[in-house]
Amino acid sequence: MSNQINRMPLIDALKAVAAMLVLLNHFSSYGPLAATVREAFPGVFGWLFDYGRMAVQIFLVIAGFLAARTLSAQGQALERSPLPLIWKRYLRLSIPYLAAIGLAIAAAAIADRWMDDEAVPAQASLKQWLAHALLVQGILGIDSLSAGVWYIAIDFQLFALMAMLLWAGRVRLLAPALVIAVSLASLFWFNRDASWDNWAIYFFGSYGLGAAAWWASDRRQMSSWLGVIATITIAALVVDFRLRIVLALAVALTLGFGRRTGLLERWPNFKPLVFLGQISYSVFLVHFPVLLIANGLYVRLGFSSVNSAIFGLILALTVSIATATLFYRWIESPAASQRITAALSWLFGKGLELARRVPLLATLFARRA
Image 1 (cartoon, one colour):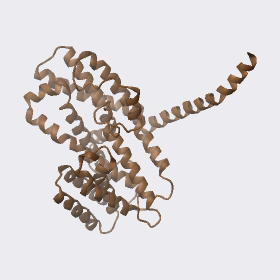
Image 2 (cartoon, one colour):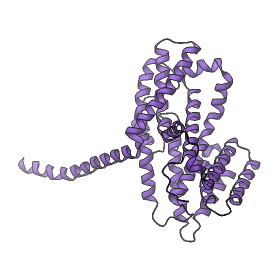
Image 3 (spheres, rainbow, N blue to C red):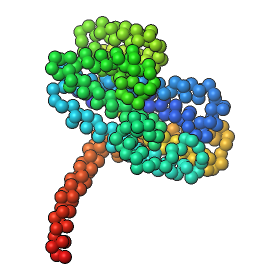
Image 4 (tube, helix red, strand yellow):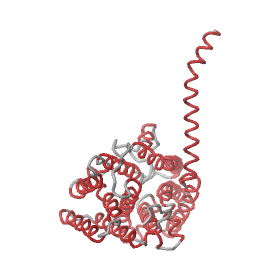
């Protein structure tokens, strides 16, 4: 089976579902809109608040699956330095992420004028912005500028850790074994201690399940390999049951069987779902600024009824998807990202050129004086 797959509808569908669950989790958690509707539908909103966040596990497993495909499609080690790959991953994540942080800062400034609510982040400081730009806000204990952006930092850490493990195992072809070993350490120890939740090692069990599913699905005895993966994960659940790990295992097995049977590339054939999966990262990034503005308008216009709050949330959901569509087209898509990267490189080059000329210009002015 070719590893060069342009689109994988099954992954797009899973990402679409996960993105919507994360969005609904935030819509049921932040601001007066959520508080008003929660009083009328406590069961539904309570479920979304408690379980919607688990959809992050779907993203983690898919990310590990795709990272294995990119870094070690045949289970091979990385022969060259992983640093260029890690830098490329940083650019892929950070260009749309930093644009979304700008939207969140602007939305928070507007919403802060209209309402007094703990959902509105405090005014951003330079230190806070730099921490976000470097993806270390969680590690440094700095307040987030937008909901859910902790995941982008974790995704980057996970990719970097996996790349380093695959590179470290290059001498004796132990690369996949190192990844699996760290995954086991995560499942049996680190993931059971929430104090590690700002570090990749806490989430690497789910990420590693995705990678293992990719490697297992390329073997002749795929069912046996996936059975081993399931058995080890169940053992970790016996030690400490975590519903999020059950979900991660289910997604990993789905991806493994989906790749081997060909469903990964041809099901489901439902274009709206596939498109929503394609823009899922943009949905993840822009929905919170939209939600802040929606909550601010709800307070500003003096609404208080349940019906108006429901309408506000539906409108915010619709605007989030529309905004994400434009955001993907202009910022996140590969073509847009390349244009932005080229423009930034040009500006950086001009800045270096100007910096080199400053001493020369200073010398010329000094001689004239």
